[in-house]
Image (cartoon, rainbow, N blue to C red; front, top):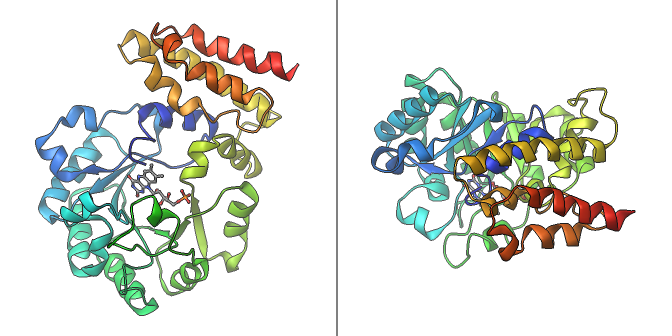
Length: 321
Ligand SMILES: Cc1cc2nc3c(=O)[nH]c(=O)nc-3n(C[C@H](O)[C@H](O)[C@H](O)COP(=O)(O)O)c2cc1C
């Protein structure tokens, strides 16, 4: 998620969810060709498995970007066909590409031809009035036939005229049943996305619906309440058996992140950037507000001292005591 899931956020999420597939922010193929490539691809092996999400609509340029991603070590190349922002639309990619399945198919084929890691697509249910089950199926079949290995579906349509990106994540209604129906008609795995905010709902998506849904993608809830990643990982039996409670797991992750922050500060990353993904970590627990306040204090952050993370934690436990 743009401006949210930077490499620090992903490092934290990996500590909380040992085997979840994580995604980069969207990087355009154009920026990779002409921009600060090294910075745009920066990540650590600790974040794996990690999908590089690309934005673009030029098959050859996307193929070159996919090669760069594969060479950099990413686990998957994901093409964004869901972003409704006016800027992205002006560049003729993102959600508006749903109106041109043949082009998306060309993009997928061009990428999958040159990399051995999976190329996948993230899309919506439709765009504006082009929002029927028939069009959705035609789109999905086109990308599947072109070699797409997995389809992530944000279970609402995009409205390209008049809604902001934030409104486009809220106003068009969620239609999960259309995703189930689509999944029943495809041979490639379908991952569902949109509005999933708790582990029970996520697990229900996976275990119910006749097993049609092969994965659940969490966006805002994972960012605002990263504990959800720990809960889900534990409930799915993906965390180490020794570590018992969610709180113990989170505190363990916090301690590891503190060491990470220390190392990053030595590489001139500023503290404000490093604490951003931590702000929601203790959401709902007693003292969370004070914890957040400490880590948001501009004056304290200016010192770039990782000790602030201990200080924030102290305020939390003091209140909880
Ligand atoms: C700040 C923000 C940035 C986002 N950036 C991206 C992006 O770069 N690529 C993408 O595929 N989706 C992006 N999204 C959309 C989410 O991935 C997700 O599809 C959407 O929020 C619905 O899922 P959720 O209800 O679990 O959040 C972004 C969402 C937010 C809130």
